[in-house]
Image (cartoon, rainbow, N blue to C red):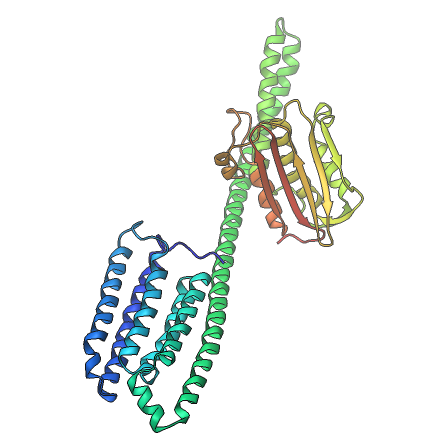
Length: 420
Protein backbone atom coordinates (compact mmCIF):
# COMPACT_ATOMS: atom_id res chain seq x y z
CA UNK A 1 0.00 0.00 0.00
CA UNK A 2 1.26 3.44 -0.87
CA UNK A 3 2.62 5.33 2.11
CA UNK A 4 2.64 9.12 2.42
CA UNK A 5 5.67 10.82 0.97
CA UNK A 6 7.93 11.65 3.87
CA UNK A 7 9.14 14.83 2.21
CA UNK A 8 6.05 16.61 3.54
CA UNK A 9 5.02 14.30 6.39
CA UNK A 10 7.00 16.05 9.13
CA UNK A 11 5.15 14.25 11.94
CA UNK A 12 6.32 10.83 10.77
CA UNK A 13 9.76 12.17 9.92
CA UNK A 14 10.21 13.73 13.37
CA UNK A 15 9.03 10.49 14.95
CA UNK A 16 11.61 8.59 12.88
CA UNK A 17 14.35 10.91 14.14
CA UNK A 18 13.24 10.41 17.76
CA UNK A 19 13.15 6.62 17.45
CA UNK A 20 16.60 6.61 15.82
CA UNK A 21 18.00 8.65 18.72
CA UNK A 22 16.43 6.24 21.24
CA UNK A 23 17.61 3.18 19.36
CA UNK A 24 21.09 4.63 18.98
CA UNK A 25 21.33 5.34 22.72
CA UNK A 26 20.20 1.81 23.61
CA UNK A 27 22.57 0.33 21.03
CA UNK A 28 25.50 2.30 22.47
CA UNK A 29 24.65 0.93 25.92
CA UNK A 30 24.57 -2.63 24.61
CA UNK A 31 27.84 -2.17 22.74
CA UNK A 32 29.38 -0.74 25.89
CA UNK A 33 28.30 -3.93 27.61
CA UNK A 34 30.23 -5.84 24.97
CA UNK A 35 33.34 -3.83 25.80
CA UNK A 36 33.11 -4.37 29.56
CA UNK A 37 31.58 -7.83 29.86
CA UNK A 38 33.33 -9.37 26.87
CA UNK A 39 36.59 -7.49 27.23
CA UNK A 40 36.54 -5.85 23.80
CA UNK A 41 38.81 -2.88 24.39
CA UNK A 42 40.20 -3.15 20.86
CA UNK A 43 36.78 -2.47 19.32
CA UNK A 44 36.34 0.99 20.82
CA UNK A 45 37.67 2.89 17.80
CA UNK A 46 35.80 0.81 15.20
CA UNK A 47 32.52 1.00 17.10
CA UNK A 48 33.05 4.71 17.71
CA UNK A 49 33.33 5.35 13.98
CA UNK A 50 30.02 3.56 13.34
CA UNK A 51 28.24 5.38 16.13
CA UNK A 52 29.60 8.72 14.89
CA UNK A 53 28.25 8.05 11.39
CA UNK A 54 24.82 7.22 12.85
CA UNK A 55 24.81 10.39 14.96
CA UNK A 56 25.80 12.58 12.00
CA UNK A 57 23.19 11.02 9.71
CA UNK A 58 20.42 11.47 12.28
CA UNK A 59 21.47 15.07 12.89
CA UNK A 60 21.20 15.71 9.16
CA UNK A 61 17.77 14.03 9.13
CA UNK A 62 16.64 16.22 12.04
CA UNK A 63 17.78 19.34 10.22
CA UNK A 64 16.02 18.28 7.02
CA UNK A 65 12.80 17.54 8.94
CA UNK A 66 12.62 21.19 9.97
CA UNK A 67 12.87 22.46 6.40
CA UNK A 68 10.00 21.65 4.01
CA UNK A 69 10.60 20.03 0.64
CA UNK A 70 14.34 19.46 1.13
CA UNK A 71 14.44 15.69 1.70
CA UNK A 72 14.26 13.09 -1.11
CA UNK A 73 11.48 10.58 -0.48
CA UNK A 74 13.92 7.65 -0.42
CA UNK A 75 16.32 9.23 2.13
CA UNK A 76 14.66 7.89 5.35
CA UNK A 77 14.65 4.36 3.97
CA UNK A 78 18.29 4.62 2.96
CA UNK A 79 19.23 5.87 6.44
CA UNK A 80 17.44 2.98 8.18
CA UNK A 81 19.25 0.54 5.88
CA UNK A 82 22.50 2.31 6.78
CA UNK A 83 21.63 1.79 10.45
CA UNK A 84 21.28 -1.95 9.83
CA UNK A 85 24.63 -2.11 8.02
CA UNK A 86 26.38 -0.09 10.75
CA UNK A 87 24.84 -2.30 13.45
CA UNK A 88 26.07 -5.44 11.68
CA UNK A 89 29.58 -3.96 11.35
CA UNK A 90 29.70 -2.81 14.98
CA UNK A 91 28.57 -6.24 16.17
CA UNK A 92 31.33 -7.89 14.18
CA UNK A 93 33.77 -5.68 16.08
CA UNK A 94 32.20 -6.21 19.50
CA UNK A 95 31.22 -9.80 20.09
CA UNK A 96 28.83 -10.64 17.26
CA UNK A 97 25.73 -12.54 18.31
CA UNK A 98 27.13 -12.79 21.83
CA UNK A 99 26.48 -9.06 22.18
CA UNK A 100 22.89 -8.27 23.29
CA UNK A 101 22.81 -5.34 20.83
CA UNK A 102 22.01 -7.92 18.11
CA UNK A 103 18.36 -7.68 19.20
CA UNK A 104 18.20 -4.20 17.64
CA UNK A 105 17.96 -5.77 14.19
CA UNK A 106 14.33 -6.47 15.10
CA UNK A 107 13.86 -2.87 16.24
CA UNK A 108 14.95 -1.65 12.80
CA UNK A 109 12.40 -3.96 11.15
CA UNK A 110 9.57 -2.63 13.34
CA UNK A 111 10.66 0.96 12.68
CA UNK A 112 10.60 0.40 8.92
CA UNK A 113 7.17 -1.25 9.07
CA UNK A 114 5.65 1.59 11.06
CA UNK A 115 7.16 4.52 9.18
CA UNK A 116 8.53 3.54 5.77
CA UNK A 117 5.90 1.25 4.30
CA UNK A 118 5.94 -2.26 2.86
CA UNK A 119 8.76 -2.12 0.22
CA UNK A 120 11.30 -0.62 2.62
CA UNK A 121 10.18 -3.00 5.38
CA UNK A 122 11.15 -6.04 3.34
CA UNK A 123 14.43 -4.44 2.27
CA UNK A 124 15.30 -3.76 5.91
CA UNK A 125 14.15 -7.28 6.89
CA UNK A 126 16.40 -8.91 4.29
CA UNK A 127 19.35 -6.73 5.36
CA UNK A 128 18.74 -7.57 9.03
CA UNK A 129 18.60 -11.31 8.36
CA UNK A 130 21.78 -11.03 6.31
CA UNK A 131 23.47 -8.91 9.00
CA UNK A 132 22.59 -11.43 11.70
CA UNK A 133 23.76 -14.30 9.51
CA UNK A 134 27.01 -12.46 8.85
CA UNK A 135 27.84 -12.80 12.53
CA UNK A 136 27.80 -16.59 12.07
CA UNK A 137 29.49 -16.72 8.66
CA UNK A 138 32.33 -14.51 9.92
CA UNK A 139 32.43 -15.45 13.60
CA UNK A 140 34.24 -13.23 16.05
CA UNK A 141 37.16 -14.54 18.05
CA UNK A 142 34.92 -14.52 21.14
CA UNK A 143 32.36 -16.75 19.43
CA UNK A 144 35.10 -19.05 18.16
CA UNK A 145 36.52 -19.33 21.68
CA UNK A 146 33.08 -20.11 23.08
CA UNK A 147 32.54 -22.79 20.41
CA UNK A 148 35.86 -24.47 21.27
CA UNK A 149 34.91 -24.59 24.96
CA UNK A 150 31.34 -25.73 24.29
CA UNK A 151 30.99 -27.70 21.00
CA UNK A 152 27.19 -27.37 21.14
CA UNK A 153 27.43 -23.59 20.91
CA UNK A 154 27.72 -23.71 17.11
CA UNK A 155 24.46 -25.65 16.80
CA UNK A 156 22.86 -23.28 19.26
CA UNK A 157 23.95 -20.23 17.25
CA UNK A 158 22.61 -21.73 14.00
CA UNK A 159 19.32 -22.39 15.79
CA UNK A 160 19.28 -18.80 16.97
CA UNK A 161 19.81 -17.58 13.41
CA UNK A 162 16.92 -19.75 12.18
CA UNK A 163 14.73 -18.43 14.99
CA UNK A 164 15.76 -14.88 14.12
CA UNK A 165 14.97 -15.51 10.44
CA UNK A 166 11.44 -16.72 11.24
CA UNK A 167 10.86 -13.99 13.84
CA UNK A 168 12.01 -11.23 11.47
CA UNK A 169 9.63 -12.43 8.74
CA UNK A 170 6.71 -12.66 11.16
CA UNK A 171 7.37 -9.25 12.69
CA UNK A 172 7.81 -7.63 9.29
CA UNK A 173 4.53 -9.11 7.99
CA UNK A 174 2.43 -8.51 11.12
CA UNK A 175 3.63 -4.98 11.88
CA UNK A 176 3.27 -3.97 8.23
CA UNK A 177 -0.29 -5.30 8.20
CA UNK A 178 -0.97 -3.47 11.46
CA UNK A 179 0.37 -0.22 10.02
CA UNK A 180 -1.76 -0.64 6.89
CA UNK A 181 -4.84 -1.39 9.01
CA UNK A 182 -4.24 1.72 11.10
CA UNK A 183 -3.81 3.81 7.97
CA UNK A 184 -7.05 2.44 6.52
CA UNK A 185 -8.84 3.11 9.80
CA UNK A 186 -7.53 6.67 9.86
CA UNK A 187 -8.67 7.13 6.27
CA UNK A 188 -12.12 5.74 7.13
CA UNK A 189 -12.37 8.04 10.14
CA UNK A 190 -11.37 11.02 8.02
CA UNK A 191 -13.98 10.02 5.44
CA UNK A 192 -16.64 9.72 8.14
CA UNK A 193 -15.72 13.19 9.40
CA UNK A 194 -16.01 14.59 5.88
CA UNK A 195 -19.38 12.91 5.43
CA UNK A 196 -20.59 14.23 8.78
CA UNK A 197 -19.39 17.72 7.86
CA UNK A 198 -21.28 17.54 4.56
CA UNK A 199 -24.42 16.40 6.35
CA UNK A 200 -24.07 19.24 8.84
CA UNK A 201 -23.68 21.75 6.00
CA UNK A 202 -26.76 20.32 4.30
CA UNK A 203 -28.76 20.44 7.51
CA UNK A 204 -27.67 24.03 8.12
CA UNK A 205 -28.59 24.93 4.57
CA UNK A 206 -31.97 23.22 4.88
CA UNK A 207 -32.68 24.99 8.18
CA UNK A 208 -31.71 28.33 6.70
CA UNK A 209 -33.88 27.72 3.65
CA UNK A 210 -36.84 26.56 5.74
CA UNK A 211 -36.65 29.78 7.74
CA UNK A 212 -36.27 31.85 4.59
CA UNK A 213 -39.18 30.06 2.93
CA UNK A 214 -41.36 30.67 5.97
CA UNK A 215 -40.49 34.36 6.10
CA UNK A 216 -40.74 34.93 2.34
CA UNK A 217 -43.82 32.85 1.57
CA UNK A 218 -46.26 35.62 2.55
CA UNK A 219 -44.63 38.47 0.60
CA UNK A 220 -44.10 36.20 -2.42
CA UNK A 221 -47.74 35.13 -2.33
CA UNK A 222 -48.82 38.78 -2.05
CA UNK A 223 -46.67 39.70 -5.04
CA UNK A 224 -48.15 36.78 -6.99
CA UNK A 225 -51.71 37.92 -6.23
CA UNK A 226 -50.87 41.49 -7.10
CA UNK A 227 -49.25 40.36 -10.36
CA UNK A 228 -52.40 38.44 -11.26
CA UNK A 229 -54.58 41.50 -10.61
CA UNK A 230 -52.23 43.66 -12.67
CA UNK A 231 -52.40 41.15 -15.52
CA UNK A 232 -56.19 41.31 -15.60
CA UNK A 233 -56.16 45.12 -15.39
CA UNK A 234 -53.51 45.39 -18.10
CA UNK A 235 -55.64 43.37 -20.50
CA UNK A 236 -58.24 46.18 -20.47
CA UNK A 237 -55.79 49.04 -20.94
CA UNK A 238 -54.58 50.46 -24.27
CA UNK A 239 -51.04 49.23 -24.90
CA UNK A 240 -51.44 46.62 -22.24
CA UNK A 241 -49.23 44.19 -24.16
CA UNK A 242 -46.12 46.05 -23.01
CA UNK A 243 -47.32 45.98 -19.42
CA UNK A 244 -48.27 42.32 -19.75
CA UNK A 245 -44.71 41.41 -20.73
CA UNK A 246 -43.42 43.06 -17.56
CA UNK A 247 -46.01 41.23 -15.49
CA UNK A 248 -44.95 37.97 -17.15
CA UNK A 249 -41.36 38.73 -16.13
CA UNK A 250 -42.47 39.34 -12.53
CA UNK A 251 -44.28 36.00 -12.46
CA UNK A 252 -41.26 34.23 -13.95
CA UNK A 253 -38.99 35.71 -11.29
CA UNK A 254 -41.48 34.67 -8.60
CA UNK A 255 -41.37 31.10 -9.90
CA UNK A 256 -37.58 31.21 -9.94
CA UNK A 257 -37.45 32.56 -6.38
CA UNK A 258 -39.69 29.75 -5.15
CA UNK A 259 -37.54 27.19 -6.98
CA UNK A 260 -34.39 28.56 -5.38
CA UNK A 261 -35.94 28.30 -1.93
CA UNK A 262 -37.02 24.74 -2.68
CA UNK A 263 -33.55 23.82 -3.93
CA UNK A 264 -31.95 25.41 -0.89
CA UNK A 265 -34.03 23.26 1.41
CA UNK A 266 -33.25 20.24 -0.74
CA UNK A 267 -35.79 17.97 0.84
CA UNK A 268 -37.86 20.25 3.07
CA UNK A 269 -41.09 19.63 1.15
CA UNK A 270 -40.46 16.00 0.19
CA UNK A 271 -41.67 12.87 1.94
CA UNK A 272 -38.79 10.84 3.35
CA UNK A 273 -40.80 7.63 3.76
CA UNK A 274 -39.55 4.81 1.54
CA UNK A 275 -42.19 3.24 -0.65
CA UNK A 276 -41.98 0.26 -3.02
CA UNK A 277 -42.43 1.09 -6.68
CA UNK A 278 -40.92 0.25 -10.08
CA UNK A 279 -37.84 2.27 -10.89
CA UNK A 280 -39.59 3.44 -14.05
CA UNK A 281 -42.07 5.41 -11.92
CA UNK A 282 -39.21 7.25 -10.19
CA UNK A 283 -37.69 8.19 -13.54
CA UNK A 284 -41.10 9.23 -14.87
CA UNK A 285 -41.59 11.47 -11.83
CA UNK A 286 -38.20 13.04 -12.52
CA UNK A 287 -39.24 13.77 -16.11
CA UNK A 288 -42.67 15.21 -15.27
CA UNK A 289 -41.30 18.71 -14.69
CA UNK A 290 -39.56 18.79 -18.07
CA UNK A 291 -41.16 20.46 -21.07
CA UNK A 292 -42.38 18.18 -23.88
CA UNK A 293 -39.58 19.39 -26.13
CA UNK A 294 -37.02 18.40 -23.48
CA UNK A 295 -38.62 15.01 -22.87
CA UNK A 296 -38.33 14.29 -26.58
CA UNK A 297 -34.54 14.54 -26.24
CA UNK A 298 -34.34 12.07 -23.35
CA UNK A 299 -33.75 8.40 -24.08
CA UNK A 300 -34.33 5.95 -21.21
CA UNK A 301 -32.74 2.50 -21.44
CA UNK A 302 -32.37 -0.46 -19.12
CA UNK A 303 -34.86 -2.26 -16.92
CA UNK A 304 -37.70 -0.05 -15.67
CA UNK A 305 -39.71 -2.76 -13.92
CA UNK A 306 -37.26 -3.43 -11.06
CA UNK A 307 -38.96 -2.80 -7.73
CA UNK A 308 -37.15 -0.42 -5.39
CA UNK A 309 -38.01 0.92 -1.93
CA UNK A 310 -37.03 4.60 -2.05
CA UNK A 311 -38.48 7.93 -0.93
CA UNK A 312 -39.83 8.41 -4.43
CA UNK A 313 -40.29 12.17 -4.46
CA UNK A 314 -36.87 12.73 -2.87
CA UNK A 315 -35.01 10.57 -5.39
CA UNK A 316 -37.06 11.98 -8.29
CA UNK A 317 -36.08 15.52 -7.28
CA UNK A 318 -32.39 14.59 -7.16
CA UNK A 319 -32.58 12.75 -10.49
CA UNK A 320 -34.53 15.63 -12.02
CA UNK A 321 -31.75 18.04 -11.03
CA UNK A 322 -29.18 15.86 -12.78
CA UNK A 323 -31.33 15.54 -15.91
CA UNK A 324 -31.94 19.30 -15.98
CA UNK A 325 -28.17 19.91 -15.92
CA UNK A 326 -27.65 17.38 -18.69
CA UNK A 327 -30.32 19.02 -20.87
CA UNK A 328 -28.74 22.42 -20.27
CA UNK A 329 -25.27 21.12 -21.16
CA UNK A 330 -26.47 19.30 -24.28
CA UNK A 331 -28.62 21.99 -25.86
CA UNK A 332 -29.39 20.18 -29.09
CA UNK A 333 -28.21 16.67 -28.26
CA UNK A 334 -29.78 13.59 -26.75
CA UNK A 335 -29.58 12.88 -23.02
CA UNK A 336 -29.42 9.20 -22.11
CA UNK A 337 -30.76 7.81 -18.83
CA UNK A 338 -29.53 4.26 -18.29
CA UNK A 339 -30.38 1.91 -15.42
CA UNK A 340 -28.30 -1.04 -14.27
CA UNK A 341 -28.51 -3.29 -11.24
CA UNK A 342 -26.88 -5.99 -9.18
CA UNK A 343 -28.13 -7.94 -6.20
CA UNK A 344 -27.95 -5.03 -3.77
CA UNK A 345 -27.76 -1.75 -5.68
CA UNK A 346 -29.32 0.19 -8.53
CA UNK A 347 -27.31 2.50 -10.77
CA UNK A 348 -28.83 5.32 -12.82
CA UNK A 349 -26.44 7.02 -15.25
CA UNK A 350 -27.38 10.31 -16.95
CA UNK A 351 -25.12 11.07 -19.92
CA UNK A 352 -25.12 14.19 -22.08
CA UNK A 353 -23.27 15.09 -25.25
CA UNK A 354 -22.26 18.57 -24.26
CA UNK A 355 -18.85 20.20 -24.08
CA UNK A 356 -17.82 18.35 -20.95
CA UNK A 357 -15.76 19.81 -18.12
CA UNK A 358 -12.07 20.39 -17.59
CA UNK A 359 -10.31 18.92 -14.55
CA UNK A 360 -10.68 22.09 -12.47
CA UNK A 361 -14.42 22.39 -13.10
CA UNK A 362 -14.95 18.66 -12.56
CA UNK A 363 -13.22 18.87 -9.17
CA UNK A 364 -15.68 21.57 -8.04
CA UNK A 365 -18.81 20.06 -9.57
CA UNK A 366 -21.32 19.44 -6.81
CA UNK A 367 -20.17 22.28 -4.57
CA UNK A 368 -23.06 24.45 -3.36
CA UNK A 369 -23.60 27.58 -5.46
CA UNK A 370 -20.90 26.61 -7.97
CA UNK A 371 -22.14 26.90 -11.56
CA UNK A 372 -20.66 27.53 -14.98
CA UNK A 373 -23.88 29.05 -16.30
CA UNK A 374 -24.44 32.72 -16.85
CA UNK A 375 -25.81 34.83 -14.01
CA UNK A 376 -29.52 34.21 -13.50
CA UNK A 377 -29.52 30.86 -15.34
CA UNK A 378 -28.73 28.58 -12.42
CA UNK A 379 -28.24 28.46 -8.66
CA UNK A 380 -25.43 25.90 -8.56
CA UNK A 381 -27.47 23.73 -6.20
CA UNK A 382 -28.71 20.95 -8.49
CA UNK A 383 -25.74 18.59 -8.22
CA UNK A 384 -25.17 19.54 -4.60
CA UNK A 385 -28.71 18.51 -3.63
CA UNK A 386 -28.49 15.36 -5.78
CA UNK A 387 -25.21 14.30 -4.17
CA UNK A 388 -26.44 15.09 -0.66
CA UNK A 389 -29.62 13.09 -1.29
CA UNK A 390 -27.70 10.06 -2.60
CA UNK A 391 -25.35 10.08 0.39
CA UNK A 392 -28.23 10.58 2.81
CA UNK A 393 -29.88 7.45 1.42
CA UNK A 394 -26.74 5.32 1.66
CA UNK A 395 -25.57 5.73 -1.93
CA UNK A 396 -23.18 7.95 -3.84
CA UNK A 397 -23.00 10.25 -6.84
CA UNK A 398 -20.06 9.95 -9.24
CA UNK A 399 -19.26 12.38 -12.05
CA UNK A 400 -17.04 11.69 -15.06
CA UNK A 401 -16.45 14.14 -17.88
CA UNK A 402 -14.29 14.58 -20.96
CA UNK A 403 -13.89 17.93 -22.65
CA UNK A 404 -15.59 17.97 -26.03
CA UNK A 405 -17.39 14.64 -25.45
CA UNK A 406 -19.84 15.18 -22.60
CA UNK A 407 -20.50 14.32 -18.98
CA UNK A 408 -21.93 11.29 -17.21
CA UNK A 409 -23.43 11.54 -13.72
CA UNK A 410 -23.94 8.16 -12.07
CA UNK A 411 -26.22 7.81 -9.07
CA UNK A 412 -25.82 4.56 -7.15
CA UNK A 413 -28.41 3.65 -4.52
CA UNK A 414 -29.28 0.52 -2.54
CA UNK A 415 -32.41 -1.26 -3.72
CA UNK A 416 -34.11 -0.77 -0.39
CA UNK A 417 -33.30 1.83 2.20
CA UNK A 418 -34.56 4.16 4.82
CA UNK A 419 -33.18 7.70 5.06
CA UNK A 420 -30.32 8.00 7.53
